[in-house]
Image 1 (cartoon, one colour):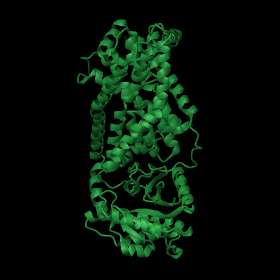
Image 2: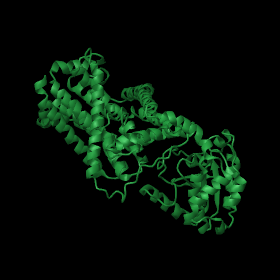
Image 3: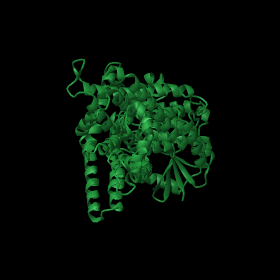
Image 4: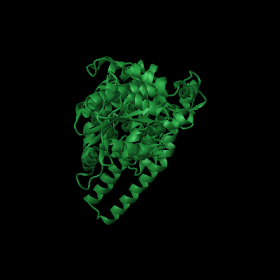
Amino acid sequence: MQRILMVGKPNCGKSLLFNQLTGLRQKVANYPGITVEVTRGQCDQYELVDLPGTYSLNGLTSDETIAVDEIKRSVQEESTSMVLVVLDATRLAQSLVMGLQVQRLAFENNKPVMFALNFIDEVKRVGETIDTDGLSAALGSPVLPLSARSLDGLHEFKQALLSMAGEPQQPDLAHSTPNDKAAERSQQLAKDFGIQHDIVLRNQNTIDSFMLNNWTGGLIFIAVMFVLFQSIFTLATPLMDGVESFIETLAGGVSAVTAEGVVHDFLHDAIFGGFGSFLVFVPQIMVLTLIIGLLEDSGYLARAALMCHRPLSFFGLSGRSFIPYLSGHACAIPAIMAARTIESPHKRLITMLTIPLMSCSARLPVYALLVAVLVPADGTFLGIFNLQGAAFFGLYFFGIFMALVVSQILNRFLPRDLESTDMPFILELPTYRLPHWKPLFQRVIKSGVQFIKRAGPIIFMVSVGIWVLGYFPLNSTLQTSWLGQLGHIIEPVFAPMGLDWRYGVAILMSFLAREVFVGALGTLFGMDGADEDVAGLAERVQADGLAPEAGIGLMLFYVVALQCVATVAMLKGESGSAKLSWGLYVAYGVLAYVIAVIANQTLGGFF
Protein backbone atom coordinates (compact mmCIF):
# COMPACT_ATOMS: atom_id res chain seq x y z
CA MET A 1 0.00 0.00 0.00
CA GLN A 2 1.28 3.44 -0.93
CA ARG A 3 1.78 5.94 1.88
CA ILE A 4 1.37 9.66 2.48
CA LEU A 5 3.66 11.11 5.12
CA MET A 6 2.45 13.91 7.42
CA VAL A 7 5.05 16.21 8.96
CA GLY A 8 5.02 19.58 10.70
CA LYS A 9 6.11 21.48 13.75
CA PRO A 10 4.40 20.92 17.13
CA ASN A 11 1.14 22.81 17.72
CA CYS A 12 0.38 23.12 14.00
CA GLY A 13 -2.75 20.94 14.28
CA LYS A 14 -1.19 18.00 12.44
CA SER A 15 -2.60 15.33 14.73
CA LEU A 16 -6.09 16.84 14.62
CA LEU A 17 -5.97 16.89 10.82
CA PHE A 18 -4.83 13.26 10.93
CA ASN A 19 -7.89 12.48 13.05
CA GLN A 20 -10.22 14.17 10.60
CA LEU A 21 -8.74 12.36 7.60
CA THR A 22 -8.61 8.89 9.16
CA GLY A 23 -11.06 8.90 12.08
CA LEU A 24 -8.44 7.28 14.33
CA ARG A 25 -7.91 8.23 17.93
CA GLN A 26 -4.79 10.30 18.33
CA LYS A 27 -3.82 12.67 21.12
CA VAL A 28 -3.76 16.37 20.31
CA ALA A 29 -2.12 18.74 22.78
CA ASN A 30 -0.31 22.07 22.99
CA TYR A 31 3.01 20.63 24.12
CA PRO A 32 6.11 20.07 22.00
CA GLY A 33 7.14 16.44 22.30
CA ILE A 34 3.73 14.96 23.10
CA THR A 35 3.33 13.26 19.72
CA VAL A 36 6.40 11.03 19.97
CA GLU A 37 5.00 7.93 18.27
CA VAL A 38 4.45 7.19 14.61
CA THR A 39 0.72 6.72 14.02
CA ARG A 40 -0.85 5.14 10.95
CA GLY A 41 -4.35 5.25 9.55
CA GLN A 42 -6.35 4.63 6.41
CA CYS A 43 -7.25 7.55 4.12
CA ASP A 44 -9.13 6.19 1.13
CA GLN A 45 -6.74 3.73 -0.59
CA TYR A 46 -3.63 5.25 1.02
CA GLU A 47 -1.95 4.73 4.37
CA LEU A 48 -1.57 8.07 6.16
CA VAL A 49 1.45 8.19 8.48
CA ASP A 50 1.59 10.85 11.21
CA LEU A 51 5.28 11.40 11.94
CA PRO A 52 6.54 13.05 15.16
CA GLY A 53 6.44 16.84 15.29
CA THR A 54 9.72 18.74 15.31
CA TYR A 55 10.78 22.34 14.72
CA SER A 56 13.51 21.57 12.19
CA LEU A 57 15.57 18.75 10.73
CA ASN A 58 18.43 19.79 12.99
CA GLY A 59 17.36 17.86 16.09
CA LEU A 60 18.48 19.36 19.40
CA THR A 61 17.00 17.00 21.98
CA SER A 62 17.17 13.21 21.87
CA ASP A 63 13.43 13.07 21.09
CA GLU A 64 13.83 15.45 18.17
CA THR A 65 16.79 13.46 16.86
CA ILE A 66 14.69 10.30 16.88
CA ALA A 67 11.86 12.14 15.11
CA VAL A 68 14.21 13.55 12.45
CA ASP A 69 15.76 10.13 11.80
CA GLU A 70 12.27 8.65 11.35
CA ILE A 71 11.29 11.41 8.91
CA LYS A 72 14.45 10.95 6.82
CA ARG A 73 14.04 7.17 6.75
CA SER A 74 10.37 7.33 5.79
CA VAL A 75 10.89 9.84 2.97
CA GLN A 76 13.48 7.57 1.34
CA GLU A 77 11.19 4.52 1.22
CA GLU A 78 9.76 3.55 -2.18
CA SER A 79 6.29 3.00 -0.71
CA THR A 80 6.02 6.72 0.06
CA SER A 81 3.96 8.48 -2.64
CA MET A 82 4.19 12.02 -1.33
CA VAL A 83 4.80 14.21 1.71
CA LEU A 84 2.15 16.42 3.33
CA VAL A 85 3.56 19.35 5.30
CA VAL A 86 1.14 20.98 7.77
CA LEU A 87 1.68 24.71 8.37
CA ASP A 88 0.24 27.00 11.04
CA ALA A 89 -1.34 29.91 9.19
CA THR A 90 -1.05 32.14 12.28
CA ARG A 91 2.69 31.40 12.63
CA LEU A 92 3.73 30.95 9.03
CA ALA A 93 7.41 31.85 9.39
CA GLN A 94 8.05 29.35 12.18
CA SER A 95 6.18 26.61 10.31
CA LEU A 96 7.99 27.20 7.03
CA VAL A 97 11.43 26.57 8.56
CA MET A 98 10.53 22.92 8.99
CA GLY A 99 8.43 22.93 5.81
CA LEU A 100 11.24 24.17 3.57
CA GLN A 101 13.70 21.66 4.99
CA VAL A 102 11.28 18.76 4.49
CA GLN A 103 10.48 19.95 0.97
CA ARG A 104 14.19 19.91 0.10
CA LEU A 105 14.56 16.41 1.55
CA ALA A 106 11.49 15.15 -0.31
CA PHE A 107 12.56 16.67 -3.66
CA GLU A 108 16.01 15.09 -3.29
CA ASN A 109 14.21 11.74 -3.05
CA ASN A 110 11.83 12.50 -5.96
CA LYS A 111 8.78 12.81 -3.69
CA PRO A 112 6.21 15.57 -4.36
CA VAL A 113 5.10 17.84 -1.50
CA MET A 114 1.77 19.44 -0.61
CA PHE A 115 1.36 22.12 2.06
CA ALA A 116 -1.77 22.20 4.28
CA LEU A 117 -2.27 25.71 5.64
CA ASN A 118 -4.12 24.99 8.90
CA PHE A 119 -5.99 27.38 11.25
CA ILE A 120 -7.27 29.45 8.35
CA ASP A 121 -10.43 30.12 10.41
CA GLU A 122 -8.35 32.10 12.93
CA VAL A 123 -6.89 34.17 10.11
CA LYS A 124 -10.39 34.99 8.82
CA ARG A 125 -11.54 35.84 12.34
CA VAL A 126 -9.07 38.73 12.56
CA GLY A 127 -10.09 39.95 9.12
CA GLU A 128 -6.93 38.88 7.30
CA THR A 129 -6.19 36.74 4.24
CA ILE A 130 -3.22 34.74 3.00
CA ASP A 131 -2.14 34.73 -0.65
CA THR A 132 -2.07 30.95 -1.08
CA ASP A 133 -1.71 31.18 -4.87
CA GLY A 134 1.36 33.37 -4.57
CA LEU A 135 2.79 31.19 -1.83
CA SER A 136 2.22 28.06 -3.97
CA ALA A 137 4.04 29.63 -6.91
CA ALA A 138 6.96 30.69 -4.72
CA LEU A 139 7.27 27.27 -3.10
CA GLY A 140 6.77 25.22 -6.23
CA SER A 141 4.26 23.05 -4.39
CA PRO A 142 0.50 23.43 -3.91
CA VAL A 143 -0.69 25.21 -0.74
CA LEU A 144 -4.28 24.56 0.36
CA PRO A 145 -5.96 26.53 3.19
CA LEU A 146 -8.15 24.67 5.68
CA SER A 147 -9.22 24.40 9.30
CA ALA A 148 -9.06 20.94 10.87
CA ARG A 149 -11.17 22.24 13.77
CA SER A 150 -14.04 23.93 11.92
CA LEU A 151 -13.68 21.64 8.85
CA ASP A 152 -13.47 24.74 6.64
CA GLY A 153 -11.95 23.66 3.31
CA LEU A 154 -11.31 20.10 4.51
CA HIS A 155 -13.35 18.36 1.78
CA GLU A 156 -11.60 20.24 -1.04
CA PHE A 157 -8.23 19.61 0.58
CA LYS A 158 -8.83 15.86 0.85
CA GLN A 159 -9.83 15.60 -2.81
CA ALA A 160 -6.71 17.50 -3.88
CA LEU A 161 -4.52 15.36 -1.63
CA LEU A 162 -5.83 12.08 -3.05
CA SER A 163 -5.60 13.40 -6.62
CA MET A 164 -1.97 14.42 -6.17
CA ALA A 165 -1.08 11.11 -4.49
CA GLY A 166 -2.68 9.21 -7.38
CA GLU A 167 -0.83 11.18 -10.06
CA PRO A 168 2.41 12.38 -8.47
CA GLN A 169 4.36 14.91 -10.52
CA GLN A 170 8.12 15.00 -10.83
CA PRO A 171 9.36 17.65 -8.34
CA ASP A 172 11.75 20.37 -9.44
CA LEU A 173 14.72 20.53 -7.09
CA ALA A 174 15.45 24.06 -8.28
CA HIS A 175 12.32 25.27 -6.42
CA SER A 176 13.58 23.95 -3.09
CA THR A 177 15.58 25.90 -0.54
CA PRO A 178 18.96 24.79 0.89
CA ASN A 179 18.74 24.02 4.62
CA ASP A 180 21.10 26.82 5.59
CA LYS A 181 18.80 29.33 3.85
CA ALA A 182 15.51 27.95 5.25
CA ALA A 183 15.19 30.35 8.21
CA GLU A 184 15.91 33.43 6.11
CA ARG A 185 13.56 32.43 3.27
CA SER A 186 10.75 31.47 5.65
CA GLN A 187 10.77 35.00 7.07
CA GLN A 188 10.66 36.50 3.58
CA LEU A 189 7.81 34.23 2.44
CA ALA A 190 5.78 35.01 5.54
CA LYS A 191 6.33 38.72 4.96
CA ASP A 192 5.35 38.54 1.28
CA PHE A 193 2.33 36.24 1.50
CA GLY A 194 1.31 35.84 5.16
CA ILE A 195 -0.41 38.03 7.70
CA GLN A 196 1.09 40.52 10.09
CA HIS A 197 2.24 38.47 13.03
CA ASP A 198 1.38 41.10 15.64
CA ILE A 199 -2.29 41.01 14.61
CA VAL A 200 -2.63 37.41 15.74
CA LEU A 201 -0.54 37.96 18.85
CA ARG A 202 -2.45 41.05 19.97
CA ASN A 203 -5.29 39.21 21.69
CA GLN A 204 -2.94 36.55 23.05
CA ASN A 205 -0.61 39.15 24.56
CA THR A 206 -3.56 40.97 26.11
CA ILE A 207 -4.67 37.79 27.88
CA ASP A 208 -1.09 36.91 28.84
CA SER A 209 -0.64 40.31 30.47
CA PHE A 210 -3.03 38.98 33.14
CA MET A 211 -2.21 35.27 33.00
CA LEU A 212 1.55 35.75 33.36
CA ASN A 213 1.52 38.82 35.61
CA ASN A 214 3.42 38.36 38.89
CA TRP A 215 0.28 39.13 40.93
CA THR A 216 -2.79 38.31 38.87
CA GLY A 217 -1.05 35.35 37.23
CA GLY A 218 -0.33 33.80 40.61
CA LEU A 219 -3.90 34.27 41.81
CA ILE A 220 -5.31 32.83 38.58
CA PHE A 221 -2.94 29.89 38.88
CA ILE A 222 -4.08 29.15 42.43
CA ALA A 223 -7.73 29.46 41.41
CA VAL A 224 -7.28 27.14 38.43
CA MET A 225 -5.50 24.54 40.54
CA PHE A 226 -8.22 24.76 43.21
CA VAL A 227 -10.94 24.22 40.62
CA LEU A 228 -8.97 21.36 39.11
CA PHE A 229 -8.61 19.52 42.42
CA GLN A 230 -12.21 20.12 43.34
CA SER A 231 -13.39 18.91 39.95
CA ILE A 232 -11.35 15.73 40.15
CA PHE A 233 -13.17 14.68 43.31
CA THR A 234 -16.64 16.15 42.71
CA LEU A 235 -16.98 14.96 39.11
CA ALA A 236 -15.36 11.58 39.63
CA THR A 237 -17.17 10.60 42.83
CA PRO A 238 -20.59 9.87 41.24
CA LEU A 239 -18.92 7.91 38.45
CA MET A 240 -16.79 5.95 40.91
CA ASP A 241 -19.89 5.20 43.00
CA GLY A 242 -21.63 4.02 39.85
CA VAL A 243 -18.79 1.67 38.93
CA GLU A 244 -18.65 0.38 42.49
CA SER A 245 -22.42 -0.25 42.51
CA PHE A 246 -22.20 -2.04 39.17
CA ILE A 247 -19.39 -4.28 40.44
CA GLU A 248 -21.32 -5.03 43.64
CA THR A 249 -24.44 -5.87 41.63
CA LEU A 250 -22.46 -8.08 39.28
CA ALA A 251 -20.74 -9.76 42.21
CA GLY A 252 -24.09 -10.39 43.86
CA GLY A 253 -25.47 -11.94 40.67
CA VAL A 254 -22.46 -14.20 40.23
CA SER A 255 -22.52 -15.20 43.90
CA ALA A 256 -26.20 -16.14 43.60
CA VAL A 257 -25.52 -18.67 40.85
CA THR A 258 -22.36 -20.22 42.30
CA ALA A 259 -22.34 -22.73 45.10
CA GLU A 260 -20.64 -21.95 48.39
CA GLY A 261 -17.01 -23.00 48.35
CA VAL A 262 -13.60 -22.08 47.03
CA VAL A 263 -14.81 -20.97 43.59
CA HIS A 264 -17.54 -18.78 45.12
CA ASP A 265 -15.11 -17.13 47.53
CA PHE A 266 -12.47 -16.69 44.81
CA LEU A 267 -14.86 -14.87 42.49
CA HIS A 268 -16.35 -12.74 45.26
CA ASP A 269 -13.17 -11.79 47.13
CA ALA A 270 -10.28 -12.05 44.66
CA ILE A 271 -11.96 -11.01 41.40
CA PHE A 272 -14.72 -8.62 42.43
CA GLY A 273 -13.19 -7.57 45.74
CA GLY A 274 -9.55 -7.25 44.66
CA PHE A 275 -9.54 -6.53 40.94
CA GLY A 276 -12.90 -4.74 41.18
CA SER A 277 -11.52 -2.21 43.66
CA PHE A 278 -8.90 -1.33 41.05
CA LEU A 279 -11.54 -0.66 38.38
CA VAL A 280 -13.31 1.82 40.67
CA PHE A 281 -10.50 4.34 40.07
CA VAL A 282 -10.82 4.29 36.27
CA PRO A 283 -13.41 7.15 36.26
CA GLN A 284 -11.05 9.32 38.27
CA ILE A 285 -8.29 8.73 35.72
CA MET A 286 -10.68 9.70 32.94
CA VAL A 287 -11.95 12.84 34.71
CA LEU A 288 -8.38 13.93 35.40
CA THR A 289 -7.52 13.40 31.73
CA LEU A 290 -10.56 15.44 30.70
CA ILE A 291 -9.73 18.42 32.92
CA ILE A 292 -6.04 18.48 32.08
CA GLY A 293 -6.97 18.02 28.42
CA LEU A 294 -9.17 21.11 28.59
CA LEU A 295 -6.32 23.12 30.08
CA GLU A 296 -3.83 21.70 27.58
CA ASP A 297 -5.92 22.35 24.50
CA SER A 298 -6.83 25.84 25.67
CA GLY A 299 -3.14 26.71 25.97
CA TYR A 300 -3.15 27.46 29.70
CA LEU A 301 -0.98 24.58 30.93
CA ALA A 302 1.92 25.86 28.85
CA ARG A 303 1.66 29.12 30.82
CA ALA A 304 1.48 27.25 34.12
CA ALA A 305 4.62 25.29 33.21
CA LEU A 306 6.36 28.57 32.38
CA MET A 307 5.46 30.08 35.77
CA CYS A 308 6.64 26.97 37.64
CA HIS A 309 9.91 26.52 35.79
CA ARG A 310 12.12 28.77 37.92
CA PRO A 311 11.26 27.28 41.33
CA LEU A 312 11.31 23.72 40.00
CA SER A 313 14.66 24.17 38.21
CA PHE A 314 16.30 24.71 41.60
CA PHE A 315 15.55 21.04 42.37
CA GLY A 316 16.79 19.72 39.05
CA LEU A 317 13.34 19.65 37.44
CA SER A 318 11.74 21.36 34.46
CA GLY A 319 8.68 23.57 34.18
CA ARG A 320 7.04 20.66 32.39
CA SER A 321 7.44 18.60 35.59
CA PHE A 322 4.60 20.66 37.02
CA ILE A 323 1.90 18.85 35.04
CA PRO A 324 2.94 15.31 36.08
CA TYR A 325 3.32 16.46 39.70
CA LEU A 326 -0.12 18.02 39.58
CA SER A 327 -1.64 14.87 38.08
CA GLY A 328 0.09 12.75 40.72
CA HIS A 329 -2.18 14.16 43.41
CA ALA A 330 -5.05 12.31 41.77
CA CYS A 331 -3.25 9.19 40.55
CA ALA A 332 0.38 8.37 39.75
CA ILE A 333 -0.57 6.33 36.68
CA PRO A 334 -1.55 9.19 34.32
CA ALA A 335 1.06 11.40 35.99
CA ILE A 336 3.87 9.07 34.95
CA MET A 337 2.41 8.98 31.45
CA ALA A 338 2.30 12.80 31.43
CA ALA A 339 6.06 12.89 32.08
CA ARG A 340 6.53 12.03 28.40
CA THR A 341 6.18 15.74 27.65
CA ILE A 342 9.49 16.57 29.37
CA GLU A 343 12.13 17.27 26.75
CA SER A 344 15.16 16.25 28.84
CA PRO A 345 15.55 12.47 29.49
CA HIS A 346 17.42 13.32 32.70
CA LYS A 347 14.64 15.53 34.06
CA ARG A 348 11.98 13.13 32.73
CA LEU A 349 13.49 10.25 34.71
CA ILE A 350 13.77 12.34 37.89
CA THR A 351 10.14 13.41 37.54
CA MET A 352 8.91 9.85 37.02
CA LEU A 353 10.90 8.57 40.00
CA THR A 354 9.52 11.23 42.36
CA ILE A 355 5.87 11.27 41.24
CA PRO A 356 5.01 8.42 43.69
CA LEU A 357 5.74 10.83 46.56
CA MET A 358 2.74 12.97 45.60
CA SER A 359 -0.22 12.13 47.87
CA CYS A 360 -2.61 10.44 45.44
CA SER A 361 -6.31 9.89 46.05
CA ALA A 362 -5.71 6.26 47.08
CA ARG A 363 -3.98 7.55 50.22
CA LEU A 364 -7.05 9.51 51.27
CA PRO A 365 -8.84 6.58 53.05
CA VAL A 366 -5.64 5.84 54.99
CA TYR A 367 -5.18 9.49 55.91
CA ALA A 368 -8.85 9.81 56.85
CA LEU A 369 -8.66 6.83 59.21
CA LEU A 370 -5.41 7.78 60.94
CA VAL A 371 -6.26 11.47 61.22
CA ALA A 372 -9.64 10.51 62.75
CA VAL A 373 -7.78 8.29 65.24
CA LEU A 374 -5.09 10.79 66.22
CA VAL A 375 -6.59 14.26 65.76
CA PRO A 376 -9.71 15.47 67.62
CA ALA A 377 -12.51 16.50 65.29
CA ASP A 378 -13.24 19.72 67.21
CA GLY A 379 -9.60 20.79 67.48
CA THR A 380 -8.36 24.00 65.86
CA PHE A 381 -5.01 25.19 64.54
CA LEU A 382 -4.07 28.76 65.46
CA GLY A 383 -7.61 29.11 66.70
CA ILE A 384 -8.91 29.43 63.14
CA PHE A 385 -8.29 26.33 61.03
CA ASN A 386 -9.75 22.90 61.68
CA LEU A 387 -6.99 20.74 63.13
CA GLN A 388 -7.88 17.68 61.05
CA GLY A 389 -7.81 19.79 57.89
CA ALA A 390 -4.42 21.17 58.91
CA ALA A 391 -3.19 17.60 59.41
CA PHE A 392 -4.29 16.70 55.88
CA PHE A 393 -2.48 19.75 54.51
CA GLY A 394 0.63 18.78 56.45
CA LEU A 395 0.62 15.29 54.93
CA TYR A 396 0.27 16.67 51.40
CA PHE A 397 2.97 19.26 52.05
CA PHE A 398 5.31 16.59 53.44
CA GLY A 399 4.88 14.55 50.26
CA ILE A 400 5.73 17.55 48.06
CA PHE A 401 8.69 18.42 50.29
CA MET A 402 10.05 14.86 50.08
CA ALA A 403 9.62 14.84 46.29
CA LEU A 404 11.64 18.03 45.92
CA VAL A 405 14.37 16.82 48.28
CA VAL A 406 14.67 13.48 46.50
CA SER A 407 14.64 15.29 43.13
CA GLN A 408 17.62 17.39 44.11
CA ILE A 409 19.50 14.32 45.36
CA LEU A 410 18.78 12.41 42.15
CA ASN A 411 19.83 15.42 40.08
CA ARG A 412 23.21 15.36 41.75
CA PHE A 413 23.89 11.63 41.65
CA LEU A 414 22.10 10.20 38.60
CA PRO A 415 24.50 9.58 35.71
CA ARG A 416 24.42 12.21 32.99
CA ASP A 417 24.87 9.74 30.14
CA LEU A 418 21.14 10.00 29.41
CA GLU A 419 21.99 12.85 27.06
CA SER A 420 25.17 14.58 26.03
CA THR A 421 23.87 18.03 26.93
CA ASP A 422 21.03 19.21 29.09
CA MET A 423 18.88 21.40 26.86
CA PRO A 424 17.64 24.77 28.13
CA PHE A 425 13.96 25.15 28.90
CA ILE A 426 12.30 26.28 25.67
CA LEU A 427 8.52 26.45 25.50
CA GLU A 428 6.32 27.77 22.73
CA LEU A 429 3.26 29.50 24.11
CA PRO A 430 0.39 28.26 21.95
CA THR A 431 -2.51 30.44 20.90
CA TYR A 432 -5.51 30.41 23.22
CA ARG A 433 -8.04 28.13 21.55
CA LEU A 434 -11.24 26.30 22.36
CA PRO A 435 -10.70 22.53 22.55
CA HIS A 436 -11.96 20.21 19.86
CA TRP A 437 -14.37 18.00 21.74
CA LYS A 438 -14.31 14.81 19.68
CA PRO A 439 -10.58 14.04 20.01
CA LEU A 440 -10.68 15.23 23.62
CA PHE A 441 -13.34 12.68 24.57
CA GLN A 442 -11.50 10.05 22.54
CA ARG A 443 -8.42 10.86 24.59
CA VAL A 444 -10.41 10.47 27.83
CA ILE A 445 -11.66 7.02 26.82
CA LYS A 446 -8.18 6.02 25.67
CA SER A 447 -6.70 6.98 29.06
CA GLY A 448 -9.08 4.61 30.85
CA VAL A 449 -8.37 1.78 28.43
CA GLN A 450 -4.60 2.27 28.71
CA PHE A 451 -4.84 2.29 32.49
CA ILE A 452 -6.64 -1.06 32.51
CA LYS A 453 -4.36 -2.63 29.91
CA ARG A 454 -1.12 -1.57 31.56
CA ALA A 455 -1.91 -2.09 35.22
CA GLY A 456 -4.74 -4.63 35.05
CA PRO A 457 -2.74 -7.86 34.51
CA ILE A 458 -0.39 -7.24 37.44
CA ILE A 459 -3.25 -6.14 39.69
CA PHE A 460 -5.07 -9.35 38.84
CA MET A 461 -2.05 -11.55 39.65
CA VAL A 462 -1.38 -9.80 42.96
CA SER A 463 -5.09 -9.96 43.86
CA VAL A 464 -5.09 -13.70 43.33
CA GLY A 465 -1.84 -14.10 45.29
CA ILE A 466 -3.09 -12.14 48.30
CA TRP A 467 -6.40 -14.02 48.23
CA VAL A 468 -4.65 -17.38 48.25
CA LEU A 469 -2.49 -16.37 51.22
CA GLY A 470 -5.50 -15.01 53.10
CA TYR A 471 -7.86 -17.92 52.30
CA PHE A 472 -5.76 -20.99 52.93
CA PRO A 473 -5.56 -23.29 54.77
CA LEU A 474 -9.26 -24.05 54.31
CA ASN A 475 -11.71 -23.13 57.07
CA SER A 476 -9.23 -20.69 58.60
CA THR A 477 -9.80 -17.07 59.59
CA LEU A 478 -7.64 -14.26 58.31
CA GLN A 479 -5.78 -14.33 61.60
CA THR A 480 -4.91 -18.04 61.23
CA SER A 481 -4.40 -18.04 57.45
CA TRP A 482 -1.04 -18.16 55.74
CA LEU A 483 -1.19 -14.37 55.52
CA GLY A 484 -1.92 -14.12 59.25
CA GLN A 485 0.92 -16.54 60.02
CA LEU A 486 3.20 -14.44 57.85
CA GLY A 487 2.07 -11.40 59.85
CA HIS A 488 3.20 -13.01 63.10
CA ILE A 489 6.53 -13.90 61.49
CA ILE A 490 7.17 -10.34 60.34
CA GLU A 491 5.84 -8.70 63.51
CA PRO A 492 9.38 -8.03 64.83
CA VAL A 493 10.01 -5.96 61.69
CA PHE A 494 7.11 -3.60 62.51
CA ALA A 495 7.76 -3.53 66.27
CA PRO A 496 10.22 -0.57 65.98
CA MET A 497 7.37 1.35 64.31
CA GLY A 498 5.22 0.68 67.39
CA LEU A 499 2.86 -1.60 65.42
CA ASP A 500 1.71 -5.18 65.99
CA TRP A 501 1.17 -7.99 63.47
CA ARG A 502 -2.28 -6.74 62.43
CA TYR A 503 -0.88 -3.50 61.05
CA GLY A 504 1.92 -5.45 59.40
CA VAL A 505 -0.57 -7.66 57.57
CA ALA A 506 -2.66 -4.64 56.53
CA ILE A 507 0.49 -2.95 55.19
CA LEU A 508 1.41 -6.05 53.21
CA MET A 509 -2.09 -6.32 51.75
CA SER A 510 -2.09 -2.63 50.80
CA PHE A 511 0.63 -3.29 48.25
CA LEU A 512 -2.25 -4.14 45.93
CA ALA A 513 -3.64 -0.64 46.50
CA ARG A 514 -3.08 1.69 49.43
CA GLU A 515 -6.77 1.99 50.26
CA VAL A 516 -6.86 -1.78 50.93
CA PHE A 517 -5.19 -0.96 54.26
CA VAL A 518 -8.48 0.28 55.72
CA GLY A 519 -10.53 -2.76 54.74
CA ALA A 520 -7.80 -5.20 55.78
CA LEU A 521 -7.36 -3.53 59.16
CA GLY A 522 -11.11 -3.55 59.67
CA THR A 523 -11.22 -7.30 59.01
CA LEU A 524 -8.39 -7.90 61.45
CA PHE A 525 -10.26 -5.84 64.06
CA GLY A 526 -13.37 -7.96 63.43
CA MET A 527 -15.28 -5.25 61.60
CA ASP A 528 -16.77 -5.88 58.13
CA GLY A 529 -17.22 -3.00 55.70
CA ALA A 530 -14.63 -0.87 57.44
CA ASP A 531 -13.79 0.97 54.22
CA GLU A 532 -17.34 2.35 54.25
CA ASP A 533 -17.38 3.12 57.97
CA VAL A 534 -14.05 4.78 58.66
CA ALA A 535 -15.37 6.53 61.78
CA GLY A 536 -16.43 3.25 63.35
CA LEU A 537 -13.05 1.67 62.65
CA ALA A 538 -11.30 4.75 64.03
CA GLU A 539 -13.14 4.26 67.34
CA ARG A 540 -12.00 0.63 67.52
CA VAL A 541 -8.40 1.56 66.75
CA GLN A 542 -8.54 4.27 69.42
CA ALA A 543 -9.96 1.81 71.93
CA ASP A 544 -7.20 -0.63 71.06
CA GLY A 545 -4.65 1.96 72.09
CA LEU A 546 -2.65 2.96 69.03
CA ALA A 547 0.13 5.18 70.36
CA PRO A 548 0.14 8.71 68.84
CA GLU A 549 3.80 8.48 67.91
CA ALA A 550 3.21 5.14 66.16
CA GLY A 551 0.19 6.58 64.35
CA ILE A 552 2.16 9.60 63.13
CA GLY A 553 4.93 7.30 61.96
CA LEU A 554 2.40 5.17 60.12
CA MET A 555 0.96 8.22 58.35
CA LEU A 556 4.44 9.33 57.28
CA PHE A 557 5.12 5.78 56.13
CA TYR A 558 2.17 5.94 53.74
CA VAL A 559 3.23 9.36 52.46
CA VAL A 560 6.58 7.97 51.30
CA ALA A 561 6.09 4.22 50.70
CA LEU A 562 5.37 3.08 47.15
CA GLN A 563 2.46 0.83 48.18
CA CYS A 564 0.90 0.52 44.74
CA VAL A 565 1.54 -2.33 42.34
CA ALA A 566 -0.12 -0.39 39.50
CA THR A 567 2.44 2.41 39.86
CA VAL A 568 5.28 -0.10 39.81
CA ALA A 569 3.82 -1.62 36.66
CA MET A 570 3.49 1.80 35.01
CA LEU A 571 7.07 2.75 35.93
CA LYS A 572 8.27 -0.48 34.37
CA GLY A 573 6.29 0.21 31.21
CA GLU A 574 7.53 3.80 30.84
CA SER A 575 11.16 3.24 31.84
CA GLY A 576 11.51 -0.18 30.23
CA SER A 577 13.37 -1.42 33.30
CA ALA A 578 11.96 -3.86 35.84
CA LYS A 579 15.10 -3.42 37.92
CA LEU A 580 14.55 0.32 38.18
CA SER A 581 10.84 0.11 39.08
CA TRP A 582 11.26 -2.59 41.73
CA GLY A 583 14.40 -0.92 43.01
CA LEU A 584 12.40 2.26 43.53
CA TYR A 585 9.73 0.28 45.38
CA VAL A 586 12.37 -1.10 47.76
CA ALA A 587 14.12 2.26 48.18
CA TYR A 588 10.94 4.16 49.07
CA GLY A 589 9.86 1.30 51.33
CA VAL A 590 13.13 1.45 53.27
CA LEU A 591 13.01 5.25 53.43
CA ALA A 592 9.41 5.18 54.67
CA TYR A 593 10.29 2.55 57.27
CA VAL A 594 13.23 4.58 58.58
CA ILE A 595 11.10 7.75 58.81
CA ALA A 596 8.33 5.86 60.64
CA VAL A 597 10.79 4.30 63.11
CA ILE A 598 12.42 7.68 63.79
CA ALA A 599 9.01 9.28 64.34
CA ASN A 600 7.97 6.51 66.74
CA GLN A 601 11.21 6.57 68.69
CA THR A 602 11.59 10.34 68.97
CA LEU A 603 8.02 11.59 69.39
CA GLY A 604 7.14 9.34 72.31
CA GLY A 605 8.24 11.94 74.83
CA PHE A 606 5.82 14.54 73.48
CA PHE A 607 2.65 12.54 74.23
